Length: 571
Image (cartoon, rainbow, N blue to C red; front, side, top):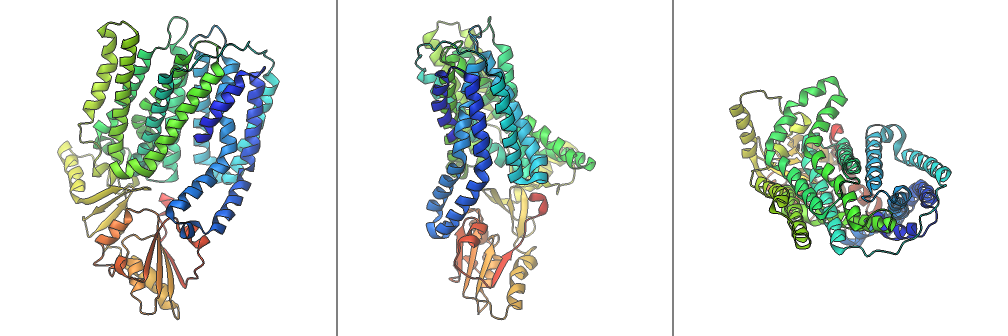
């Protein structure tokens, strides 16, 4: 997102000064193909650099995270910077003087995003599995070269005369940043909240992304149909879109566990095969995501239209709106992933996004009233939508039945009883949850249904007593077979039983444990009576991070490495 935003600013201005914007667009696509094709080599290079630096174990968690972000930026910067210039260049190429509301931008934006839906679905459900990541990247690069060739062939249009630059209204650009912030923050909430319902696999991520892009693309196309010579985008219309987006984000929250019950009732579609499950997942994503994403798709071209009319500075204005929107999106993704969701929980951030958008609608309406004398009747719709969105936040919202019930992985029977029995099922699951938290990577809960069990993203990953045989013996068998075990490495903390019992072996000198999710530490503390009080054992050393990275960067040599694999259906 940072690359797209910076590219939108600099290359958007550059597109204003080019005599042939379509040829400029073709060059961008060509260099995108080249830089993307080279990215696997960059990944290989920075991987060896990072391992050589010692990774998180040497650099520490904070510095290690910063270094990983910088290396990721190094790989992504060239293609994303160039991608940031494609929409401004395309806008200059397609907008004509008669198109005062810049409808063509809405069409191009929508078509581009609909294409992204196809890419997300094709990659998730076919190309990654059959071709692998590297070959898929190279295939996409070849397609981009074809796009560049076609654009070069069509680039015969003469340039429009360069007009005097018009100052960008600060309010519109600030609004672009705020809606970008809100939407990306909400995307993180959707990923976290829908993972338990969709089974928590990689298919979940791809499908959520595809439905969000489908909504945005459809909204962009709808904008091109809504506005023309007789209708123009206005500040009031933008206020309506903010209020409508807040309403459609708040509505699934108000529906709460009804969404999870619907998930349970749709499970029989899985009897027709894998794509029966995909059909059910798509229906759920459509209910929760599509309406709000559709409104967001209308918003962006409307903001560009508010910056100016027709061809005048369309490239630089599109780039500026794109840059501010992506800057907000970047801030939303960082704030959500590293602070808001762990601090306020995913449902809490869900409410926050609704309030931000409803508040932006009210502020926008105030700006409109100040600049336009208008009747109260024209204010009713955005005010009513904002009030309804805020009122729905008073509902109970998603509970443990949605987040921690295993409904998404099919461990609950399809229930078709009377409403009171379904209500009892929901309440029974809620009563069993004695603690829950949103971590940096996952949602985690403790259940006392049958012994103390911990749940990660809706799936029970371990029971302090029920799984003790596996947890304890997975470590002890290796130790029993080794003639003199002194150092062990355990992947994943869980209940702490594997590490704790290994550390209790008299010959054992050191047990290193690497856990990805910090919230799991609470689980191990609660399981102290059965894990030999693992966290208090001086032999045990806990690291928060990625176990694969830790093994690649450590200088230690281990006698035993223990890993209890995750379920294949969660891979």
